[in-house]
Length: 432
Image (cartoon, rainbow, N blue to C red; front, side, top):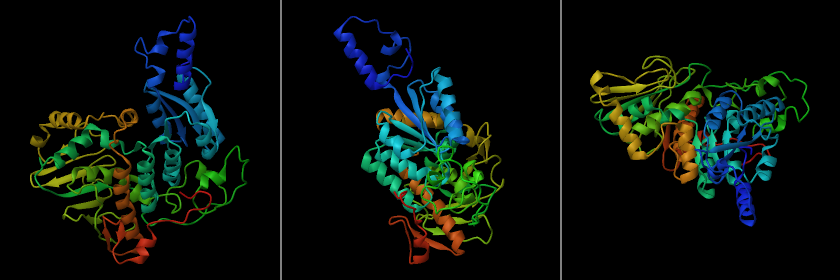
């Protein structure tokens, strides 16, 4: 029997067994270490490209998950991911969809979706999926504006959905250690955290268009859906292939590229109750490097580009009265101002796991929460609060002046021009 057994199919098989004698394979009943179908999470992918292919392999590596479908506007990519999924299960069952609206209507049997579209579709797809009753794991940056972040939070609450944004370093031991050292007071009072921003592109993005190319058939590339809520632009295959970074309509700048990770990492170790900074200090450069963001309690987050505080990517560093500790990709152990601060590494990480009950595997944390209905480590509110700082920092750079922000109302103080940038116009029918 194929591993693709839905919950509905399992119940039907059980009913038939009661009606008459039947031999049921042990795997169907969950024996021999197999996960019974009634406990499997049915899943699908939306827009699985690049980084998303690794996410899909990560998802497929969980025995209690059954991936049933792929939805993508690009035929080439639909077929590529279908082949990946079918090869994993040894069948040809993965269904393909071009239009997310059709997919969500036709597949009420799917519990959770993995979203790895371009940035401008993350919030759009998340809200639509949660309205359709799906739990969501989405790549970052998970919203294009403060208003989109609010829409994601509202949808998760209204529809009771589990949501996880792909800030996976919140579930990695080295970063957990750095965060917990700050959060638990082992560094003394923390006064500053440094958050890494990407070393490419600019904070001040362009609005130029690539040259128009012949529009392919809709089944090959659905350009209207790819654009989604963005203004209409002439087709260019480079956008579909991933060359959209640095363009205002499609990207959150060098600040959002890594700040989507590192701001959330910074928040987790600070005594700020998840709220964004209230002051953003403009810096006269093209990236935001050195911008100081101040929280209401006086703690500061400094945006840093390059390797001044770490080597590797997506780093954070907490500076306190007793020293500093930080982490970034590629570290075998966190870095610290003295070896003594690393002595409790295993204990600190172990205490975190015991206190939270969370897996140090970001995808596994999401799947566990799909089953338990608990909040994931990078839930919608965590995403929204950290991305609000990303957007506020971007707006500060775009306007070229210091800004004051109210963390309670999520509005800029006495600044109509900045407040108009909290949202972007969305093209019909892609309004959430």
